[in-house]
Image 1 (cartoon, one colour):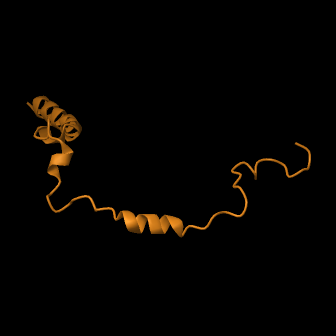
Image 2 (tube, one colour; image 1 turned 90 degrees about the horizontal axis):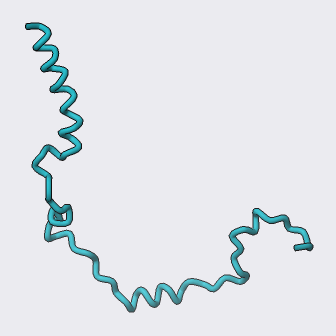
Image 3 (cartoon, one colour; image 1 turned 90 degrees about the vertical axis):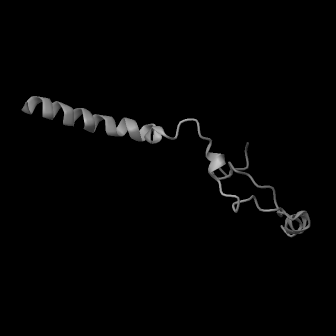
Length: 77
């Protein structure tokens, strides 16, 4: 009798992670985008404000070299 109880308890403990992966069994086939509330809408982009913000970014004085720190600074290529 004790062996049956221990085997049942062990099987129940092994099934817990599998149930968590399946989202409790009730989450099959649901799309997560459907769970979004109607209050959470995408923000409206103001094109005029976007363009003015882009124009305020200063132009760089010299060209950016991402590999500049990896190469030696000698005069020979």
